Length: 172
View 1 (cartoon, rainbow, N blue to C red):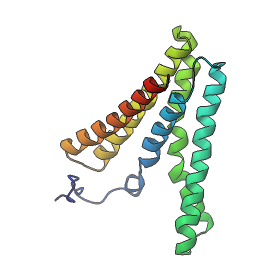
View 2: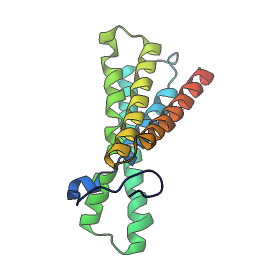
View 3: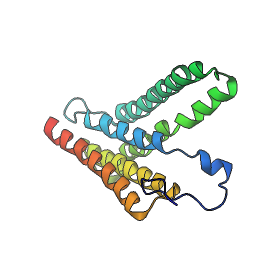
C-alpha cells in the first residue's frame, strides 16, 4: 500500500526510535553549510579556523532558531510547552548542527591535502552537497519509499546543490 507519493507503508510495527527519525534538519543543515561556504570569499583574509567556527556557529544559531520556532510557534499554541517537549525539540533539531560538522572537518583537514583557499572551499562545498543528497536519499529509504522516489529525492537535492554551485561561480 502506498501513501500517494510513492512511499510504501511498512509491514508490521516500527520500533519507536525508528518512527521518530527525521532527516529534515540534516538536509537543511547541509544546505545551510553549503550556503555559508558559498558566501566565503577566498580572496578576503581567508582563515580556515574562522570558516570552521563560522560553519559550526551558524549551525548552532539556526538550531536554536528552529527550536525557538518550534517551541513558540507550535508548543505554546498547543499548550504543550513542558520540559519533556523542550528536550524533544532540542534533540529533534540537533541534526542541523551535526550537518555542519563534515564540511567543517573538510576545511580543517584541507591543509593536509595541500589545498589552498579556493580548493578548501570547493572541498567543503562538495562535502556539504554530498551530505545534503545523502541525507535526503536516506530519508526516503528509511521511509520505505520506492526506488523512484529515492532517486527523485536525491536528484532534487543534487539540483539544489548545483544551484548553490552556480551561485558560487557567479559570485566569485
